[in-house]
Amino acid sequence: MKCEQVQSLLVAYLDGEATPSERALMQVHLSGCTVCQQEFDLLSTARSQVRAVLQRRAVQAIPSREVCDFPWRDTNFSLTVYRGSQSSVVSVNLPVSEEVQTHEEIFQKMRTDPNAELVGEETWIDGRAVYVLRSHQPVKAILEGSTELPMGWVLSYFDKETYKIVESRATMEKDGQEILVYSYQVIVDEILPAGSNVTWDLSDLQRIPIVDNPEGQHVSFLPEVLSEQQLASRTESAYLLQNIPEGFTLEISASPKQSTDQPFAYVATYRNEAGDYLVLQAIGIKEVKLMEEGTVESYTTARGLKLTFMDNTKSSSDKQFSSAVVETSEGAAFIINSTLPRKMIKELGEELVPVR
Amino acid sequence: LQIITHAQSGDREAFAILFEQYKILVYKTAYLMLGEASEGEDALQEIFLQVYKSLSGFDPGKAKFTTWLYRVTFNYCLNHRRKKRPLTLPLEDIAPALRSEFPGAQLAEEEILQQAIGKLTDKQPAVVILRYFWDLPYAEIAQILELPLGTVKSRIDLALKTLRKVLKEQASGKGSVSRMEVCE
Image (cartoon, rainbow over all chains, first blue to last red; front, side, top):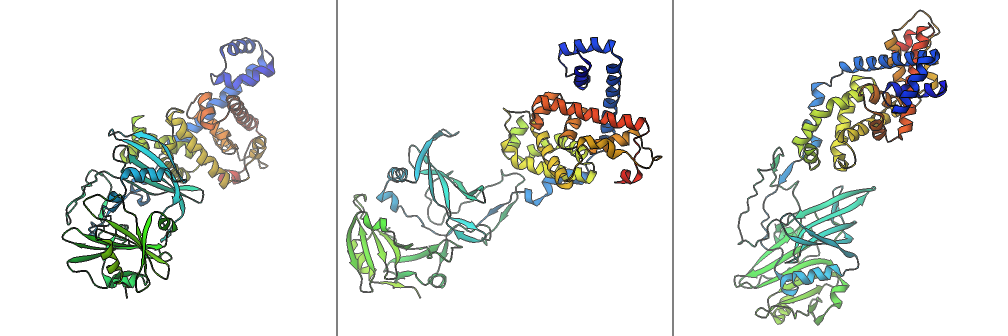
């Protein structure tokens, strides 16, 4: 071994990082070369001094108590759960879709959508098997206080047995980052008698403050019940029946914090004790696709509203069921779903008037 | 490892345990890298905030937790140093920089060394701290700093030789440093 070679390995040698053969060769060289031996001694001293300096500096270095409390005091770090009041809307989703289309049919329809793709199957810890469907679609998101519909990705999980959606997650991209817009999982799916009180026991969420928030500043996505006057004050394009039919009650519900640049969405539910109903749902502008698919009859009211009845051959045998799209001359559109006969819906259509 | 897995799934108590276990590692490393107690404390907070946010990205199959934690710590410190001192001296200039034109203001060897370590550039102080403070083997240092083993070897070699040169010059009377520099 030459001096140059030895000196390039001295530090590694001191650090115990030279290979056994290097060590052996160096030991031989060092025993007979005073220049390299001197260099070795100097480096060895420097090494000890460096160690000593670092140890001495760091030995008193202890972070202050204040800093050590840090992550658990910082409010940015904590998660707060806001518990809103139970929505008092009795029926937002009537079992309409179940009668017209089964869950399986809805699933099949969704998976054949060109923007959707079946990405796989999973088995959950509880043993449930699910299909995972991913679709690229507009996602309703509240961005800087206003409701918008940016394009995003929605992952939907369908129970393989019932085809019901059991989980859904929507994400969107903003400033190069993926943001979770919403995520929900269906834990129980039960129909309770109207007026049932559901108590959420969240006591297992330890160290997470739970704030009751009945006013809804934080919890504001559940539909709320509106009076006719309130509906009129929210929008100028709402329609309702001039008079509530005999024996029926009316409930108007709408999502809070709706975007002002979109038509106001609301649901007016007329129902009687016999279980008949007529549900009028504002869907904003007319959807052409709806009009093309299996329409059976059109009817125009004296006030110029066009009712287009849909073919409901799939309705269950013992119960009549009708649905129709209502278009106003201004281009606003509504859907009517009802257990009433078509003739009666036409008669009621004559009574549809703008809410003032 | 179980604690890390719990912390990864959002268990705050597990994260608190991680913090307790590793706060000294992070704090002392940052303190040695940055040179001041207050900076070390800021670093401790910032680094654990980053750890909290990015813990899900840590893969126990790929590296030891401490390797990952050292890496997060050094990345923070290197960025911080870069911001703070955009003009660092090249390694070769350290010895002359420590030399004073005013003889008589002799400093203890340790203080000279301390300053010399502080003036090492880029990843040089990191290798010195990992090797001579934390006593880590070269291979682990290479993993932490994401450098080839040969590079770690040559950097440690160069760093120690530079520091030795500083000491040698100081011993031969050339290496006194002005008071101005001491107070820097």
